Length: 470
Image (tube, rainbow, N blue to C red; front, top):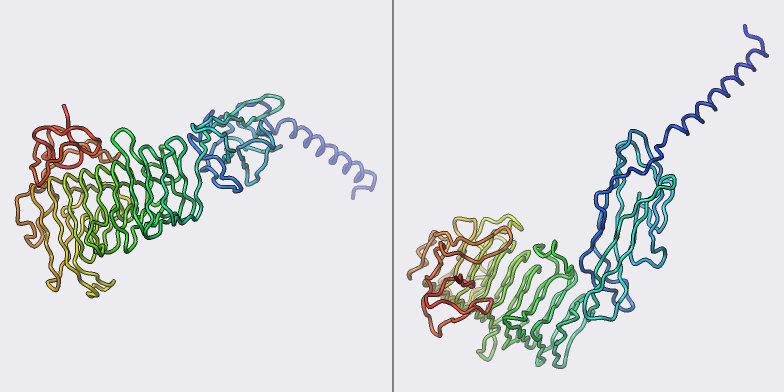
């Protein structure tokens, strides 16, 4: 049996060896070279609205940078936001936010993710101004920089605003940003002049009890869309609620406008009591809407040279009757925003519950000429009618994706011939000279001499809203 002196000496020896091994491990365990591989050398935010006075709104989308350690040993790195506490950028690493991060361990062949946002201060100019900073990484005195960049754009903000006096928006330099709801009371007119740009935040809607005049022109269109003014979100639906014309709203006019990224782009409720049109639209695009581009509920709508495209369910839905007139319009649905089995152009003189039981009915009249209705389904016309109210479906000289359900089409139309849209993946519904819509238009009433872009149409015009010019 070992004596106590031997045991004590052995213990001291083992303790010394363990300490020595730990010391060696500390020297060998971490790589000391800054060979970190960043997924990008610049974090770019494109355009972000500057801060609304007295508010933290808006904050940008979050960008993610991955940093990989390519070595066979772990590393310990330090990260510093160069702008410090005054920086307009926010950084989060390993769930912690701050301006300096020390001793961040990245395992061998492993990665860490950095989350970056920006909240920009007003710059008191009409054009976007670039804001710069950098994120610095350091390992044993070796440094690397990742640039942070954003364009900050000052805006005119309206938060939960109801107008009860006439209002005109004229600023085509600074955009108008709607936070929450915005409304126009009965007897009040809101006008948007050429070049105005409107951005609506999530859950925002524009309610019109009086009258809305959107007066864009071919060179200065009016734009209304979700409040992320960057390229990658331009195809994203459901960013805001849409424009809702309430019961009693009349004499509304929309021309040369682009209305995008809503849940329901434009909704019109109830026929006007004085017999005037609820809404007249000309050369307007409504696109990338989560449920419907245009919804009319017993409404009176006229549209010419308009594009209704890429909606979750309907490019147009005429519900519970109404009066609708379309000339040189394009209705197209290829987006795949949501799965659908029904046609995206739908009209009905009924209102039914979820079980299909008839609740109400009202007269419907729908006329369409020189237009295109196309999509990926075999049948893109959705018809529901009851004989309890008049149902007039007068379509002539259109290009339609349809099997002519119940022989509803009684006048000459072209069925199931390819319109040859330029790029349905990117929502480009121009046609080319091989299209079945090329030079196929006829005259119904006053000739339509221009297209949605204001271009002069040929002597033999094309169907739809876009004119193919040489």
